[in-house]
Image 1 (cartoon, one colour):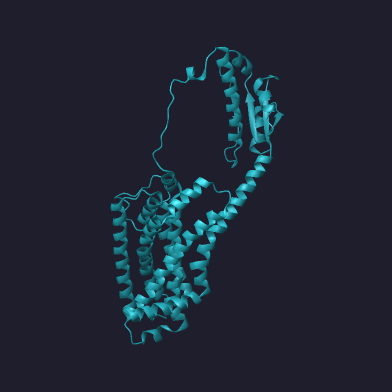
Image 2 (image 1 turned 135 degrees about the vertical axis):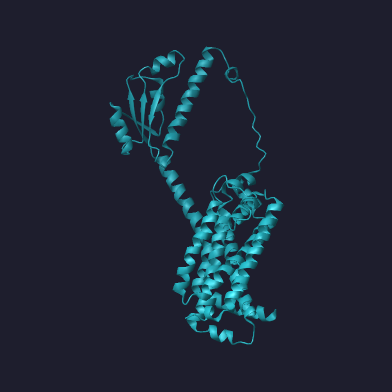
Length: 396
């Protein structure tokens, strides 16, 4: 055991000396989330402030010069009404973004209002717009509708309860952490799965393919220790590198959110509930065998490759085999059950999402954990068999 520890320590120090591995394993996972979240928040705030300062240009077609609705719209500070004649021109201007919205008030609008009927409006908008132009004018419509309704109730000497037969009180028994976990919790496992794989990939290439390129593989094999000890020491370094990368990605996410002043306090409280000791330990319990599983897959490939370029070209397609199952875990409706609990990587993504939400069932967690143990054992045996083959590890 002492020999394995010495090998692992030596290989780990060599790994930390490699700038490329250090960048992928530590720097990027730790700094990527704070940089992305801070930049995204700044851009969103800037765009939101810009949109609030802009006024909406609304093309208006109305045969009646004076209607209560038109007067109501003209009083809005953020609206600029532009009178138009033809509907085709109005639609064209909206499509070309010369106008933000188009509004057609029906000829009988005022008569409908006087007869306590519904006034007909036609709203012309472009659904591909990313901003909230439509929602903004709909809010004005609702305000106008409420004022008309209040006036009608006053004329008939009625109150609002007389036209509201049902008054439903809704009680949501789901906690805020559960809601957050189900809606956005899948993003967290998606990222630490990806970073765990990347954290394993470059050390695996360096410790096996790199040894070939440096011409030191033969020297290592002549040392009076077993190949199993050499392999175990190297595998420990690769798995620990993946674990560190995954852990730092989670730390980077936490720090990134903490750095943004505009994050609501309620969200920060949910975040504190998620990043508790028991949640972290459960997540790490899944990441550790998964990292060994990744190491067991990467070692045979990196020991077979003759140089770094060949190893990278062989391993790159594996990225999709990791990304696709993890991405499926983000999809709504995909839940952890007996149909998905045995699917590698997907089961980790779904189980992690349940852990973040605080709704993981012990039987599912245990099943996912032991399935990962079996996969890690299988890939470790595969790596050992490939490492014993001199034609494989000395291939030039």
